[in-house]
Length: 367
Image (cartoon, rainbow, N blue to C red; front, side):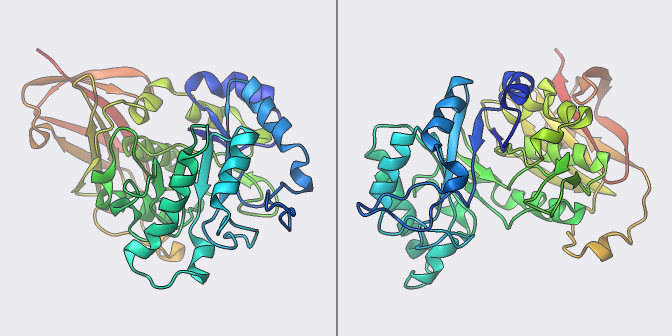
């Protein structure tokens, strides 16, 4: 899991680190305008002591992540790593980097065709460069590489971005999240589909000119995090850490919900369209099941927010057929957000789910 922050290190460390939030990643824009005479790409004036920054992050028990592209330039038109892969890897190892996000964008200017093998090539080059330095660096095959779940593991990726950039609009969150069943089978221990960051809490300048509340309602934020946890998705905090409020903090520090995301079985999530919603589930390592009952369109996703807002805002009952999942006999059902047992059921369970909301449950087979 990743923290994206700029201030109040001690405060977020004390509140979030015990729940597994580990990485502090800087994204595009850290690069100087030019490489040095020896080819090294230094940081710009915003990161005047990047080695000191890395050392400070490590002193808190956290890890440090950085960003680049296989192209001559990055998505933000900064310098990329094209033809400097080994030197950049050596530089990052010297700085104490633990994580690399490697976005495809700039490579499109130099790639000879759009064949999958061609797109894969520069990622293998960087994987080899990372393997040659004396540091363990987690490797994210980044944004813009098509069908990456088919080849990201072969290219040496530990995780890979599966979609376009997310925004804090319900129809975009669901269009991204509900598509993940297409690539779910690529999920396995040590290999993860990345549907982009969490757009909860107060969002900063990555989305708008000033810090403002996420456009997602509270129920939509519960649903957003629940689905990402069921997907075993890398969890990246996208909110402004200096504006972290109690509601957002509670979203990010529910140990039972996080346990679903971090379950070591990393079982691929399965989607079942039902009347008035979708049910997503995955098996957990202790033999139980994590299940999300989502009030959303069963089959369709809407990229157009105006069309999405025409849907009536009502609660619906969603029915879970336990036998359809192979669960026969009595089960104990526990509400994970509320951290309390709901009761014992046999065969079927029905929950009233709020508009654009979720009930995230754990189903425990009983002897």
